[in-house]
Length: 334
Image 1 (spheres, one colour):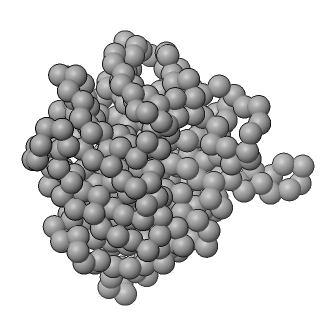
Image 2 (cartoon, rainbow, N blue to C red):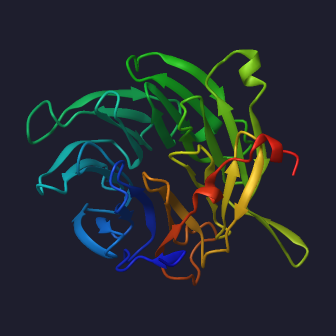
C-alpha cells in the first residue's frame, strides 16, 4: 500500500472533522460545511453512507456501534445510526453546536455550544421524537472545544478559560484554569492515559497540561511553539487547528494552517517527525484505532478570509509503528 493516498468523493465544502470509528480501523466519518456527514470505507476507498443537517456541520463523533452524533450551525444535536438508518434530533442549543464528544464510561453525548452551555444527551431515554437532554450547564464564555477521558471533561472556551468537570457531577466545576497559551484556544484533546490534555492556540503554540493539581504534577506542564514558517525573512505564525493522540503509544500529531503535520513525543518533549506540507490548512486529524493510519483533512480554514485555495481533500497516511513510538530513554539526548 502507498504511504499515502487521497480519499475518493470528499465533501464539496470545507471539512470540519474527520473521525475514525473507535473499533473499526477501516471506517471514517467526515463532517463538512456542505451540511453533510459522510461515512467511508478507507480500504475500498469509497463513500458508503451520508446524511444531512440543515446548515454547516461543525463537529461529529461516534457513539456505540455505528451510531453517529453531529451538530453545527442549525443548532440541532443529531443522532444517526448508520446500521439502521434511524435518524433523530436529540434536542437543540440556542446557538451553533461547536464541539462534541461521546463518553463511553457514561454512555452519553457531551456537546459544547456558542450559546455558552454544555449539554449532555442520552438517546435511549425520553420520547422518540426528542431524545433526552440530561442537562445544560452554563459557562462564562462561548465553547470552542471539549474532550472527555474516563469521567473527566475538559472544556476550552473564549477568554482563555479551561474548565475541568467530573461527568458524574456536572453541577460543580472540578478545576477552573486559565490557559497556558496567551491567545485564543483552538482545540483541546485528552491524553490516552487519562493524566492530562494538550491544547492548541491560534498563535502557533501547543500546551501540555496535567489534571493532578499537586505542585509536583503542575511543575511538569509546558508549552512550545510550532506551525511557524519563515517566508521572505518574516516569521509567519499559523493557528494549530488539530491534535490527535496515538491510540497505542500516546505520542501525538498536530495540524496547522501552514499545511503542516508534525508528530510529537509529549513525554520527552521531542519532535519526532515533520511530514511534507499539505496543499492548504490542516483542519482536522484522526487516528485509526489500530494506530496504523492518520486521516488528514486538508481544507482551508479561512484564517485569511476569502481567497483562492486548494480543493478540500482528505489524505490517509500509513504510519509505521516506529514513526509513532516515543523516544527511548537512551535516545533522549539526541
